[in-house]
Length: 552
Image 1 (cartoon, rainbow, N blue to C red):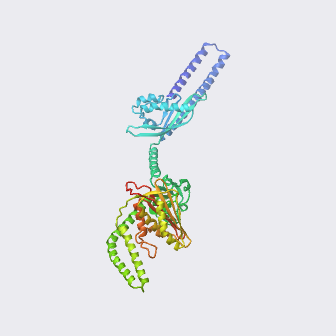
Image 2 (image 1 turned 90 degrees about the vertical axis):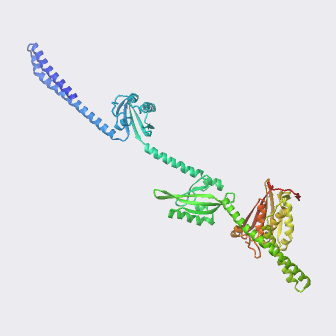
Image 3 (image 1 turned 135 degrees about the vertical axis):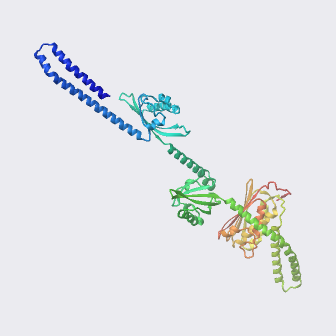
């Protein structure tokens, strides 16, 4: 169209030049000047025509180059999977790619020269979104530089699309607004994946942080990379003390090889491993944990190990108490059916031996041995009956110091025979508790007697007593041969004893007395280093007290 216009102008100007110059030359008489003009007008025509054609060709080339550049730009932005939009300094659309036109449902609208609010009239659904674009653009102008924002665009199907949008404001040399370049990338799928990852991360964090069990994260070398807060609550140790250390530095010697073997098996076999281990609380108390170790698989490769450790200390103690109770029940049933049958002929045998002892002076030594053995049998039967028959305990208020002094008086002679001293760290004031005094005497006689029998000449058996508002604690400590770990685990079991002539019923009766008083008994011992027995008894027996007087 422009080419035709330029040719028409050239044609008109040529006719005007030819006829105009000829007419002007005819008006004047021939002169040398007119002759010069007549000979040079063709040259002027050629010069002017050449200039015109040069100007025409230059404009055509510029126009062609501009169209080619615009075509390349249009091809480029339309090939992009992002929304691309160019606006002038007033916010009017200059150019947008097909993705952007389709995004706002204005593909068939002549958008050039229109603002977002004007284009909103052509798109009912995206009208609000287009109007908001003007507000967002103004933020870019106020920022005075490139800004990056995430914009959410509702869709007709009820879903939304999220765009990572970059806005680049352009300014003239005088600082006025020249134009705005907008590029928006659809990151909807990425946001969905990020949200899923964040949700998964939050779930993992909740499982890790709020698990009631200890959760330990390990790398493939067994180094602790993380511990959840329950570690501090259950063990008393700070997490910072162990994070970064190798598992072998934390485990006790008795369980180290077993646990490290299980962890190695998790890495090599990629299968869960379960085991139990004992760990010392910061206070010194022994804790029992049931642990499960699992491999952490990432991209089909093992990246680490996660260990879940549940505190089963109370559960194992309850199981042990039930086991002991079952044994006591069996012993009780056995005792009830046998004890009385033994005692009746035992009385007859003892009476006959005593008659023979009176009539036969030559065999007194034999008779005395027989009576001693019969008395020993009678003592065993008495212990069996004590286990078999439920005792109706009547609690009374008694001074625990008096009970302990009575026990020491009874056993002092036996201790002296073995050159063993009994010392009592007595208190200045009485320690009154609600108890059955005779049963407590039997309890402490059994314990002190065991301490004497385990001691050597010149050893000391030390008794001490402490009390608080709720409990009284008696400690009996000796310097004897000690008790092995295996025996400690079985102490109190009926018929289990390390003594050559022991029945194993003494400590069983002692455990039963402590249990009936709602107390606890604990043994601390090492072979060749002695034994400490700790008996803790409540001051008050709530709901079970029949006060029948005081023993002082």
